[in-house]
Image 1 (spheres, helix red, strand yellow):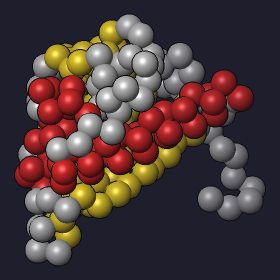
Image 2 (cartoon, helix red, strand yellow; image 1 turned 180 degrees about the vertical axis):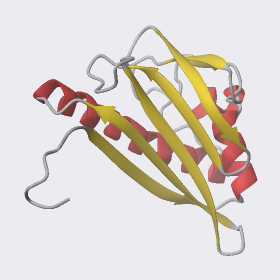
Image 3 (cartoon, rainbow, N blue to C red; image 1 turned 90 degrees about the vertical axis):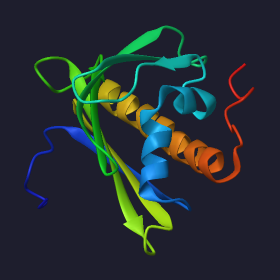
Image 4 (tube, rainbow, N blue to C red; image 1 turned 60 degrees about the horizontal axis):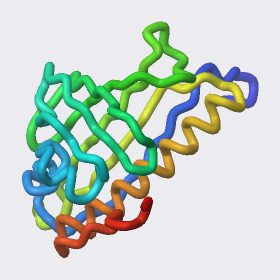
Length: 158
């Protein structure tokens, strides 16, 4: 972006490497039983498959979050959408894309998470930064879970 272009929406990308093959890391995100162990502290219901409507619950953000799975291409990509109070989209949703890239002959996986589209306001920035923090925490928890069977979030929020 040049200095003269106007910022029209906020988005962010976080990434990290997990020392397991793509298929195993993908499954840890797509499978609600695994996701419930290390990320959705209140539980995940429904597998992340294209066209599915699933739900996530968190102890730190009470309530059920409906999630729509837009794409699921095992073991490389999952795209979800969910409602956001400060979305820049007409439908009031944000889009989160998970990408799983094999590294070192698929002995490790680069996981990249991108979330978009937040309005360019203080409230939009606060929401985007909060979700960026959440996805960064999810990546750390995913790594600890898949590599060592440790749930980093257990007892963290209550």
